[in-house]
Amino acid sequence: MNSIGKRLEQYTAKRPQEVLIVTVEIADEQDKIAIFKGFSSSLMRPTAFDADVPVLPDGANILNIDRVASPYNPEAPRYIQQGISWEAMEALLLEVGVN
Image 1 (cartoon, rainbow, N blue to C red):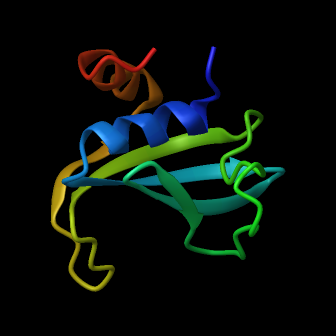
Image 2 (cartoon, helix red, strand yellow):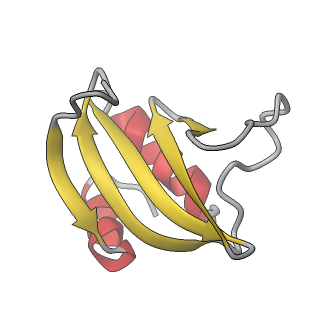
């Protein structure tokens, strides 16, 4: 089974018109991660150059997910859906065939 991060990346590869902004807690620190067209990048800390180092580790606690229309403009994001729970996101993953 794929990791949560890989599944979210696959979702954005299938829906390139969307950017996912994932608010997570990693080791008691909050982070925001942008996922777009199959790639993840932290918006709050450096992202590793090595693509094999997950930006969203499996132990991360997902607080919520926002679906934003592409292209993403942090100054004026165009939200499709805000504050999605992991359970609701799993339904969207299944909808596009990501298990």
